[in-house]
Image (cartoon, rainbow, N blue to C red; front, side):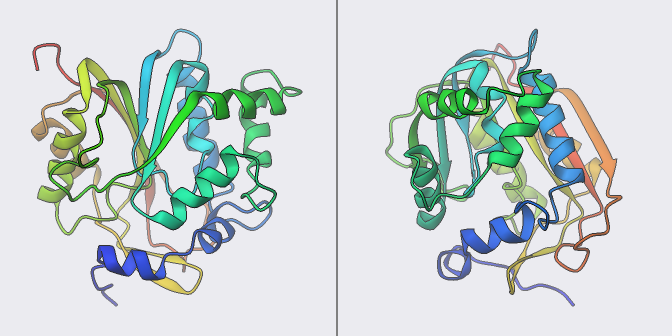
Amino acid sequence: MQTPYSTSQTYIEEFDPLDYYQTYFAPGQGIFELQWTEFVLRNLHETFGPGGLKGDVLIDFGAGPTIYHLLSACEAFNTIITSDFLAQNREQLEKWLRKDPDALDWTHIVKYVCDLEGNSDHLDKKEETLRRKVTKVLKCDALAEKPYGAEPMPQADCITSCLCLEVPCKDLETFTNILKKLKELLKPGGHVVIQSVLKCSFYYVGKKRFSSLSLSEDELEKAFREAGYEIVKIKVIPRTDKLGIDFSDHVGYYFVQAHKPQNC
């Protein structure tokens, strides 16, 4: 069954961040708790750990209601600006940042990252570092000519995005154009670090079904090159966990690190 394109209004009306967390990330039941979590967190640890990328400003594009993908980056950048299209997702981010008792609980993932870093007893310190480094939670719109509208944005040393860029796209051209718009937010020589799923045409959040642009590895590489990036590294792994196969039809996971040429 082909999934109808999920419009921006569909997301505004139907996307529930609590259902998203329960479906994909809740301890002991989230379908991303195993393979995706290990894949993405290890990649970020290697990318932003000792000897890796670092700088002044990191922009996180399309965070959803999540903070897990910033736990390694917060050690490598002075300022983090995170963002999402949906007000309900931004509300969840703000709740976590201010330690609201109703905030989503990312403790299990914070512990995983601390274990990777050899600091198993520093969970509170890790969370406080991230809270201190995040200076803004902004609205972003991948389909807008200027994703941050009239908001003055610093040029970033790095842009990150997880499980986002395929979601608003109807075709490969739209995906490529989003990559071009992100490149405009980077300093010359700045990097993008993008991670997501391959060949995913739909996913569920609770009982709501949403569309996604199904991308192959070849199409992914083509989009980055046509957008004017120099690809530093690509990793692709097949999906081996069949838990939740009915909730999303993706067949694998990808990691791309690319940079904006110095002369751009």
